[in-house]
Image 1 (cartoon, rainbow, N blue to C red):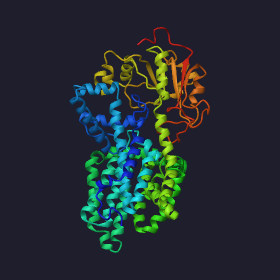
Image 2 (image 1 turned 30 degrees about the vertical axis):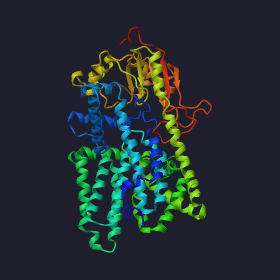
Image 3 (image 1 turned 135 degrees about the vertical axis):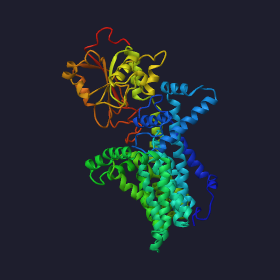
Image 4 (image 1 turned 90 degrees about the vertical axis):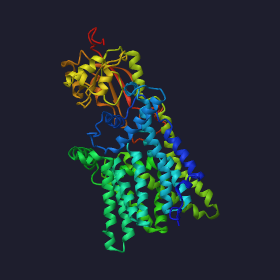
Length: 581
């Protein structure tokens, strides 16, 4: 009988030295280099997520964007507000206006608060999966499970970002674990709590709704001999609890259902429909498995998981059916979505349980040498993801290529120069005149602009150096930016437009392994390359690129995070005086 079934209190598990070791290891791997890149934030998802959370401070609790449900935004807003209160009590700031001004000047602490939440969620997930393993195995299996989860590369990597994936994984494990009691006890309270747990998880991230599959599996196992109970009142109460809790935690998804359906469909077009056009139905399964093999878990761990599935079936086929219900359903789902490694985060806790069961099973074939064999096998299974996690922490601690390019520009390019820059590359400061011009082009009076623009314009003294920025792209929702389409940079188009006398430099980026930036050969016709920042080792040359959140395995062929940055100087310079702020 498992420790869970025999009534083991959860807090007593924290006295287990092996669990404590796994928690400590997981914590170190997740908080190391947590401030990577700051005060610059190069991940666009982090920027958009935090922006929506901070916008709630205006008093409008409707995020007006439902690519994600709302609960994570509310949590971030509450955490940021709590930090602001602590800062005021400590005398570091004297008002919320000062707090806001400091954020726009240097957002480091606020991003650390958000990233710290991801790191803490990742560590708590180690404990949660330890408890999950106790439901289907013994304490030895639970200990090995915790060790595997502590080092899993993709969960370690994604715990360094202010994103939904790691917190959602914790809530999914909690929801699946809650469904265990539906099977074992079947009380009304168990059904309601399990349904509510799924509702909370879904309010944080839509795909977490698949945790309901574990609840349904537990219900079927509980009532498999009674058709009347199969469709009984308790199941409907669980469904009602799930919907009610979701509505409370993410109310505007239902209250503003028209906008929500529009955004969900737009997200589906990007994530699901694009994947099926590219890979076919269930075609994303192959690249997802490749990420699991080469990065997230490693080959030894996956082989152990296959053995573990057999061992768990032999131990209790019904318990394995319950455990496998969610990961099977979830893998089928992501097999039809674009193969981002981060989407597979919820699989790792279950792979950890299965892998641990396999390692324990194999070790017991060594008889009286079972314990040293288990230690050796666990080390082998941990080696690949641990090495990737350690190397990730080391690499992201290095200065990003975009930060180095910024430093070069500020040292070599006069303040006020015109610079065309691609999105999500070097984060340059716009001149006050350029911000005002962007607002005017958008038909917005400066005193009616957004909080960010108004704060930027109100700086005294204005930050220097600053540049007349043009953002290369088809346009965006940022009111303080002036966009120019990429086709305007072709030699003929560039010379025939008003851009020629206004742009002194063009900053391009190349995200290997996707190949060189096609604009490089275009601008080479009228510009000269004056500086390059390269993330690759000089001895290895250009290979796979390594951006911190890209699905590229960390390697010593890369010496720092970031894309290749090229700075081109336009040969026909602006007239004298045109570059003054």
